[in-house]
Image (cartoon, rainbow, N blue to C red; front, top):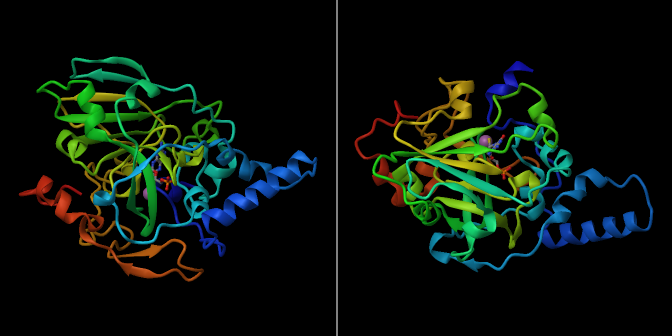
Length: 321
Ligand SMILES: Nc1nc2c(c(=O)[nH]1)N[C@H]1C(S)=C(S)[C@@H](COP(=O)(O)O)O[C@H]1N2
Ligand SMILES: [Mo]
């Protein structure tokens, strides 16, 4: 359906069950697993199989970069997803990503940097503490969640590659694996998914390379094993399953901007004053707040104005949307 390819995300109805706690969710999974082990068929194996592959992480909560809003449940965060490589519906990524293999994983670093090459993910992470940061996530479709992400500051990882003075931007690429990603066998977007940041945005302490959530490695539907989080920008900037990082002198292209340039700009900062051409961005619906949702005003830069406003001083944010 044509109209759907122009929405980074989409507006499928919320499920009425969005208040299940992580604990209840995991217990339910255990019961289902036990039932399956006992040979009981037809209990939704697809729904539960990939999140079952997660393992515990050693994390340290970073209170300085955490909001006090109560986080969404593990179930909300892992069952209401946008990941077009696995389909367009919110439930598709959880249901259709179980065959995806996030390990072993390497990241190839290219372009304007001294230390380029292909690196094992573990080696990139080794020098860092994995921080847990509770961030707001605001989708351009006007819904939001609060997520305890686990990851390392993007800037600290980028510095390992020693970017040169020509590195004005950094570009990211998602893995291309049509055999494991059914959405990539369709033309819903140009594959692989690509994104980019200006280098000073990438170095901002809020930018996080996430490897987990709720103290566990990322489930496939959330972008295992490595994805970007820029909480002051719309969710679509948070590219998943990253395999390539490239430092560039010129502004790199990005998937949603290629798909619909008048609707999705390079910056994609959360801005209640700049409406999407087809809907308002002034308010957002909080996922998990019940069937009718709770609509609250959207904040400039998703509430992270103090941390990031200086990056855009002097820029006309209606032009650079
Ligand atoms: N590779 C890739 N990354 C992606 C997307 C996608 O379709 N493909 N969707 C984006 C959108 S629109 C959103 S809102 C967030 C959702 O992240 P979540 O599913 O972990 O909440 O992922 C972003 N990253
Ligand atoms: Mo989104």
